[in-house]
Amino acid sequence: MISAEPPPETDAGQRNMRLLVQLRWIAVGGQLLTIAIVHFAMGVRLPLVPLLVAPLLLAAINLATQSLLGRRRAIANSELTAALLLDVVALAWQLHFSGGLANPFASLFLLQVVIGAMLLSPWSSWTIVGAASLGLLAIAVQPVPLVVPPAFGDPFQLYLAGSMVCFALIAVLLVLFVTRISRNLRDRDAALAAIRQRAAEEDHIVRMGLLASGAAHELGTPLSSVSVILGDWQRMPRLVQDKDIGQDIADMQAEVARCKAIVSGILLSAGEARGVAPEFTTVRGFLNAVVADWRTSRLPETLDYIDRFGGDVPIVSDPALRQVLGNVIDNAAEVSPDWIGITSLRERDDLVIEIADRGPGFPADMLETFGQPYRSSKGRAGGGLGLFLLVNVLRKLGGSASAENRPGGGAVVRLRLPLDSIARPAGNQA
Image (cartoon, rainbow, N blue to C red; front, side, top):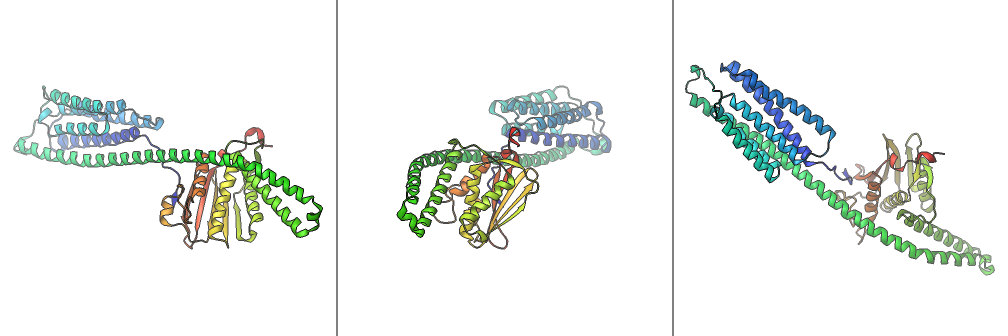
């Protein structure tokens, strides 16, 4: 199923901080495991108290950071810089009490530098470079030496083995980290593209609204004139005596009244109420009115309406929602003139309306661009605005629209709308 709901906008700084937290947990686990192996399995006596201070402190920082991430959405560059500086200091502390530069894991400073270059601004990246350089100088000054038991043979061979382990660790962590960062950047670019697309669509909606509002104003006068003329014809004796002409005039009056109602709805949707008060109704009353209006003006036996909403809810009827809902039903009737299925149901606090048909379904490329303007399966120039308006009206109300092809043939358009967005105000519940 393809949904027209835009992807969620996420903060890159928060995602990067979560990556640092994950990397720090790996570091804490690796440090504790290394200390246990070297001290207890290999018999190399280590100063356990100062060496255990660093992983315990990093674990406490991680817990505090995770609590902070749960309360805040944006993480600044300075906070990421401070987090990386803490990691550099902790690494320097560990290396100072485990041989200094003679420790093959001194190369882990390079990992901090690379991560800083990928995550931080230029000045912050150079700050991490300076901190790593100072860390290397610090561990070169009177470090606590490691006393390797003679049973391990040449200490240089042990250093080479440790260097190989350190290289493998850096390589694996960099691949994992760079892959995650690249995915974060792609998600950020996709979110920005969605924002730009939404801005362009909303600008298009504004221009269409201005055009529709202007056209509605222009149509109001001739429709009123036609209504007056038809009213005069209905009172003319010569025409009243002809029943066929009288019936035709009555039908024309009804259609003119319907056109005037559509024009009023357009102006109301554009924010020009023209003195029309909002209509207070219920979910069931609103949907029943839409179905009844469609059945009155079209073939009634083609529409199959199933009400599964449950307990009724008072709402304010939205003319724009009613108009776009009618457009979806009209589109379904155009491709499936023999049957249209409408189902209303409630999922938690959302109203869900499903409009199904037995037509040919949506092409694959149409599903991929569902809701974009001028993307139509009817092959008409300028088509596709109905679904575009549908998606944007629902989005303005906090809802979403999606479409999929039915396994047995045909398609279904699913509208989801939070009931809070159309709920009747507390002072108008009567």
